[in-house]
Image: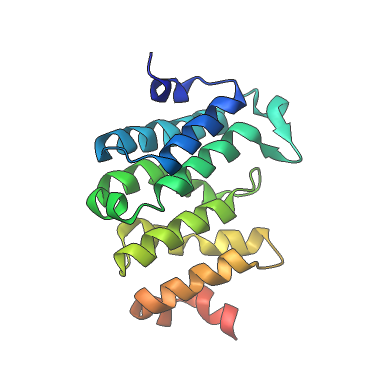
Length: 177
């Protein structure tokens, strides 16, 4: 079985690191990267829904989820890959990003924000996923009394690439005022 195919069932953390190292340092065809994106996204959702997730937490974070997000950040750092496969990538990420609506149990908002910033900076326009994410940022604000750098950097992307949407948004107006 190819290593990529094991993403869905890996229990050995070092294998995630090996896959991340491969996609980071070697040129791969886009269909392979897309497969890795899909499998990694599916694994994150599987882990989030797993009843045994509490048993694998380290310092409040699930190790497998963290390693999967690391791989997604690497994948979404490849501009050509993102631009050529945007619709598919967004369809894989959308179910994960939807968890921002109920961010109480998990702390992976920064990873979501970082991935979205990469996509926005490559596309130079608001995408369907970025619009959906923007409408859920108030859930993040309600959860976090403090706002962090990743959040503000994402807001800057929205101001740069989606000023028309931001101008009349109540959450954004409250943030600024």
